[in-house]
Image (cartoon, rainbow, N blue to C red):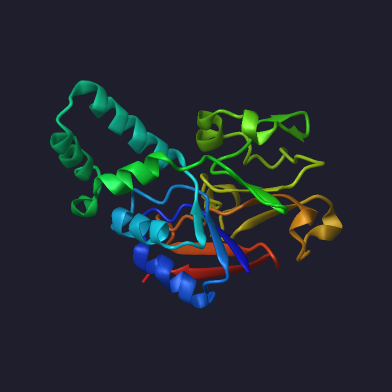
Length: 227
């Protein structure tokens, strides 16, 4: 099975409970659509786990992008690499776990993924009319900061379904549930991902305490509540 999740924000224990709930196995795949870090208590513990799993594929969100801007700013100021690492450790509540290997892996994160069935980005893809811009032509800033893609009237047609996070669904609907945008009204309960223009995944675990993911093979959603 293939799963997608976004905006875990350092909630390591909650993420592990969600993986237990879906019975995540070695022959499954998980795509993590950015914002693995910040807000929650265990950012580095979480990314160490994610980076260690061969069947987990991560992209950068705006929080990884902002961390990298901070990192590169420090690199321009000094060549004291031990001092830089100490400053970077102060960025996180569990920063004592941070090492250069993790910094380098965050630095190498891609900004989108594309499979046969869907495109995964953190915030959105620029849209012209009702057509998606080719994702490879979008800038990193557009992919991690976009604020227009979440709007209900943005319904890109003719391309693959786009999965994204960034904006908690609670801000859009008042509910902590993954939000589906069907291409046609009769597709509203479809189990086929091709029947949706886009799917919003950020269930706002750092706000309301719900962390969710979707199985893209069945469009079934799974949730765990923060303890």
